[in-house]
Length: 86
Image 1 (cartoon, rainbow, N blue to C red):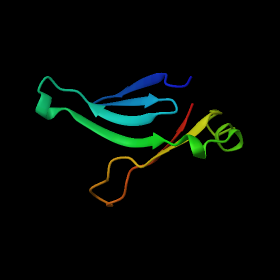
Image 2 (image 1 turned 60 degrees about the vertical axis):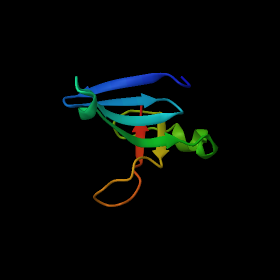
Image 3 (image 1 turned 30 degrees about the vertical axis):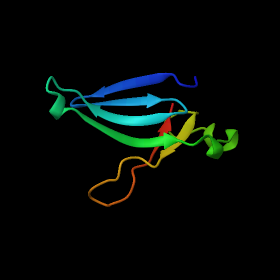
Image 4 (image 1 turned 90 degrees about the vertical axis):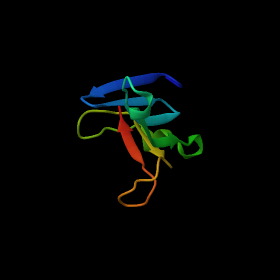
């Protein structure tokens, strides 16, 4: 799965998850200046462990990863981070 990318369309946004690499929030437009790409986080392999990342979650997913050090949020002035579950 390493490097495999998955895409989910949520209306105006498209989410791109590249396993063991990055998580992005994208908006595509015909006009280049209207396109948006937000980095929601980068995977850090030195933080990976089977016990932490392969577990049962309430919604039945069993592979969990943390992506951190993303784009700085202009509301809370902190870098974005996200936990994914597949």
